[in-house]
Length: 431
Image 1 (cartoon, rainbow, N blue to C red):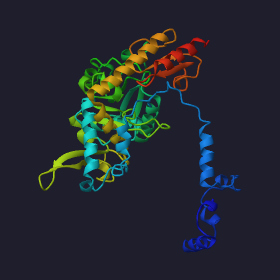
Image 2: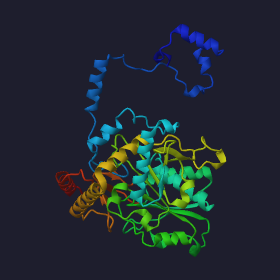
Image 3: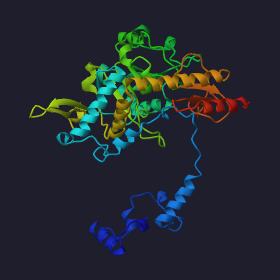
Image 4: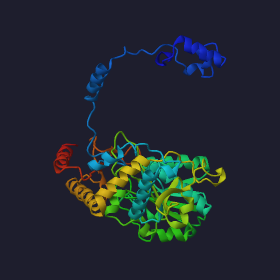
C-alpha cells in the first residue's frame, strides 16, 4: 500500500522514528494477521491521463440503460436547467450548514426559504434544515415521538418502504424501543385498519406513534380519514411519510391531522445519480418544535434593523448539553435542499400540480393497459404492482416473499406513451 503514498523511503524512516516504530509492519501490528494484505495487488500498469480517459470512456459504454420504470423511492422527474445553474455556483457549493451564521446570510436565507416551502407543502408549522434522507427522517421522527410521549412502542405499516423500516429498526434497537409492523390489506395493499393496534381500545398504553406512508411503497393511496383522531385518542402521535410530488394533488398531511411529516425530497430537483444523495424532509406541528432534530433557520433583524437570518435552533449534541440533545444528526443535505428550493420556486403551485397530474394520468393509462396483470385494487399515484416474470421495475420478492414474480412499476411525467406501449407489447409476450 505504501506504493501509493508519495513519501520517499527517507520520509517514511523519519516518520517511523518520530512515532517510535521500526517498520511499516510494526506500525500496522494491531491489525489482525488474517485480514492483512500478504502479497502485492495484481494491478495493471499506470496510464497517462489521455489513456485513462479513453479507458474509462470504453468502460462506460458497457453500462446498460436503467429501466425507465424504476422507482421505489428514487424517481426520474424533470429538472429545470436553472436548478443546476444555481446549485453549481461557488457561494452555494459547500453543503455544510454554516457555524458562523452571521457571515453566511445567503445560505441561511436559502435554507429559510426551503423550510417555508416545506411547511406550505406539508401543512405543518415548522421544518428543519433537512435530514440525510427519507429513511433517517422516519427514524428521527419515531425518536421524537417517543421523547414527546414518554412511550417506547412504534407501530409502522408494513406498506412503508422496506428499507425505511430496516433503518427504523436499526435505530430503535440501540435505543431500546419496540417496533411493531402493522399488516397491509392483501386486496388493496393499504394499511389494514382492522388489525391496527392503536391504543386504549386494545389495551395498548405504551404506543408512541403510528407511521404511515402516503402514497405507500406500492404506490397505493392510504385511507387517512379519521385515522389521526384514533391515534390521538390513544395519546400517540401520527407520523406521515409523504411523497412531495404527490402533494401537488393530495391533501397536505397537516390537514388530516399528522403531527410529524417526513419524506424523501430527491424528486424535488435532484437527480437519481446512482441512488444518492437523498434529501430528508422533516416538518412538525408547533408543539413539537423544540423536539425537532437538526437545525432550524429563523428570520430576525440585525443591529441596523435590517432583515437577517440566523440559526435559531441547534439541537445536535455538539452544540448543547448532551443530555438535552435531540439528535446527533450531523452534516445535513443543504445543497440538495437548495436544489429543492429552486425547483419549487420555478415550478410554483401550478407547475407542481401539473407534474403530479401527469404522473397520475400516465400511470393510470399504463395500469389500464396492463389491467390483467395488476395485483392490487384501489387508487394509486405513480406506482403500482404487476405480476410478471419479466425483469422490469423493482422485484418485490426480496422484500415481501409472498409477492413472488411481482414487480413495482413506476411512471413519471417523463415516461412517454411510446415507452409505455412498448412495455405493454413486451409483457404481452410473457408467460
